[in-house]
Amino acid sequence: MSAVAYTVAFDGIEAKMVEVQCAVTPGLPGFAIVGLPDKAVSEARERVRAALTHMAIALPSKRITVNLSPANMPKEGAHFDLPIALALLAALDILPRDDIAGTVSLGELSLNGNLVPVTGALPAAMAAATDDKVLICPEVCGPEAAWVDAAKVIAPSSLAAVIRHFTGQAVLDAALPGEVQTPSGVSDLAEVKGQERAKRALEIAAAGRHHLMMVGSPGSGKSMLSKRIPSILPPMSPIEALETSMIHSLAGVLEEGGINRTRPFQEPHHTASAAAIIGGGRTAKPGQISLAHNGVLFLDEFPEFPRSVLETLRQPIETGEVVVARANAHVKYPCRFMLVAAANPCKCGYLADAARACARVPICGDEYMGRISGPLMDRFDLRVEVPPVAYTDLDLPEDGESSATIAARVAAARRIQTERFVGIAGVRVNAEAEGRVLEAVATPDAEGRALLLKVAERFGLSARGYHRVLRVARTIADLAGEEEVRRPHVAEAVSYRLSLAQEV
Image 1: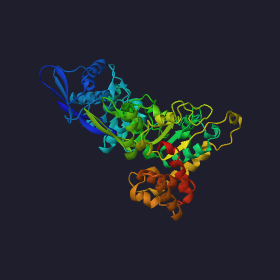
Image 2: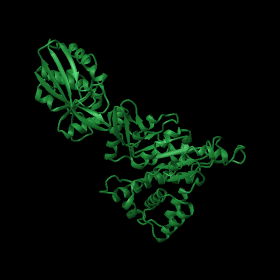
Image 3: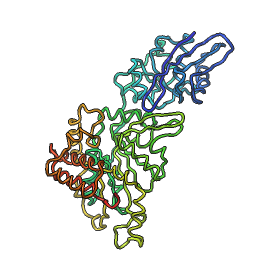
Image 4: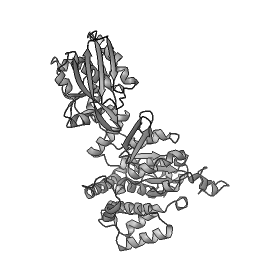
């Protein structure tokens, strides 16, 4: 007696199909799982045996062999419990073999037969839809997986419910998609007193997904400004939401079983390791930069991060993806994020304050900002100084623009970019334009070009810096609703590029 069921093994955000073959043959009683399983998969036989015993289903005194094919692909995780149980039940003629062969399943079994939630339901649903199969997953994972329109998702609460469904005793309805509610009480930029130049930089960065560096003395409002970036970012498009949610599903951080349309905002502490930021560990899980895909990665106290960690950001910033290579894993994750960094100008933080500056000026600042390498600093499109706000200004009423007003302009600029880059693979915003695409959309008028060439020669802009000025100028023109990049747009872009010139 033999039967097959299907499940998936994860390679990055890709779910690869695995055939679970089960054979019940004469011989010494035993239960073996082969096909390169890890410890969690090997232990599935005890969970399956206990769950079936709890349901009064006795295993025959025969040899039970489960093969996970392809056998040379590593199999990791407890989500193999359910497909192994289904293949075994089909081999015992308890469940119809043809029906089980038309399913992709994943879920961990408790000893009483209940299904425990697992990670990766969303990419598994994508794989099931591609193969035109039904996905069976734990009840809690159903709303997440049901977001894949082409997939039929059944989300039982227990193995007994699966048996009743396939035997016709109690047929289960298809799971319905859920959605995480938009967080309430988001802080507003209108609450920030002063700092108009920094607010403008935030608006430009959000509109074109440009990387931003803010430098200022302690308490000047760098973190306060950064934490209000989500309030001016547009919601994710359906494609972006699906991409981001697949990563969060694999990482096990997708809350409430639904797709979140709010752009992620990741803010790791400066003591985080390279594996936590880039991704890694024994199973090469996604790191903070991948969890920030299509959103914001905020690194406060930027120079305090280990130099080795900061330097690992250089390649992902340029390519928008990261390859995590380990001895037993080699996976690729997308990571198109907006990097926002905040730093004090020196170790004591008061380099520009004549009344409080330490006796080591300017060496103090040179040493501190020198922790950030030139190639990494060159990747910031916008650099802005955040001066301290006088305490007398803190009692003044709010007079700045609200986040809603700024968000409307940002959304309008993003719509312009979406229409501009239709049909161009890998380009959605100005920050991703390069080569001929960048030349076609961001070449300035004669006056703007003359200014940019003069600045490039005078300050020795690198080729990367030259192109990043063009991208920022294109975004500034989009915010103004103008088709052509003109001299004022280039001048403003250059002003942000040359800020903090002493650190470049």
